[in-house]
Image 1 (spheres, rainbow, N blue to C red):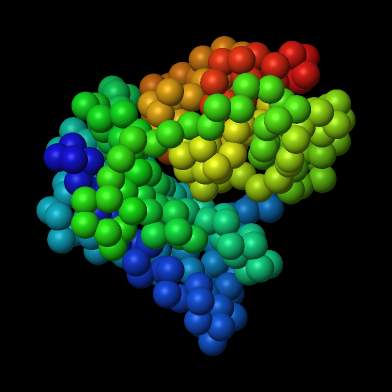
Image 2 (image 1 turned 60 degrees about the horizontal axis):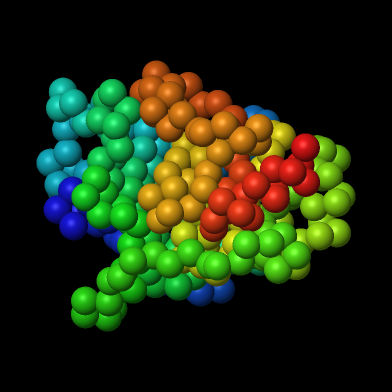
Length: 278
């Protein structure tokens, strides 16, 4: 895990700092306080600041001296090394304070040319980290168990009728643009999004994810690099490969775009999703 060690350590340390707070009912009201309205319906909460403090504290301890893009701080240069870290220190904040505990910590490293080095997503519900690097396909490490690391195993569901799909529908405008035939056919449906969905897909707990019209913020879409490296099929809403290198190049210039995503455990299910979305 040599290449992965920094992103893994950051994800694990943020998760270890935040997870106990989420079960402390006395902490939740203050952690949910809105500290910044970023526009477009995006808010920053006190818990985002807590997670971000751990991020930059860990980078300082590690002597990291490259470029960082964080959802809260934007683009920050910590030195002249040709390295680039992208971090969403707490993904799905607004859901947490509405009682929905589906959240994660996501950290990725790329070269400045946009080449993948390593990525790690810590699950804030189950103490585990899903990770990959240049030498290792997507794997899952269960924290607290010595040596409990193994390959991420996708589901075998190959038909929409049998599939558990996650469809990005939380906001009204998303619901207006999603074909109803997808709902009618899917075996089961959930409606969250964010990095936690990529974790669930990579380890086989869900079978597919659809955000085919509006798209995920580009720093969140990077989570699907780990799904692809687990052997899943990941494209944009039209069925074209996602250009992760272009996403990284944009973030290196502080440009956040929307990226449509259709992801599935296998090609058969993915093709059926595209057909239903057409």
